[in-house]
Image 1 (cartoon, one colour):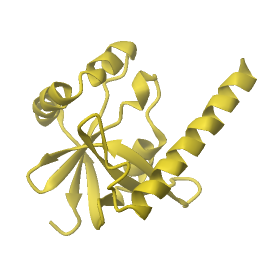
Image 2 (tube, rainbow, N blue to C red):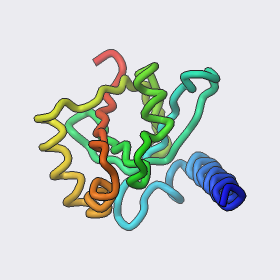
Image 3 (tube, rainbow, N blue to C red):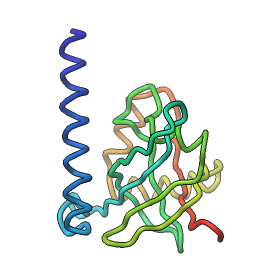
Length: 147
């Protein structure tokens, strides 16, 4: 079982790394959407390692801000990128060829409820993820740094 889990993690890491490289190389023309949903690249700073880590994420717009979901596929643990943002909310996103410095904040309950409705309308899979876990899946708002 442990070998299977390790192999799965290695394969997933390789797939994510490949996605990031292709997205950057093509400025998001390849890898910038999935089933009609837009994808951005989020680069955070590791809370323990200090290394920069990049993750492709589905997003939606809220005015000038970008909204992402820390679903982690419905697992009972938060994704690493989310925990990294809690430790250091300064990050960078790539949308197509545009690189944007952002500051992350977790949407408070009222805003989360409004955003969650929009998120699930666009991708019902998030509702499935929420049913799989006992944690409330965080919704993160990425606002342009300095605004």
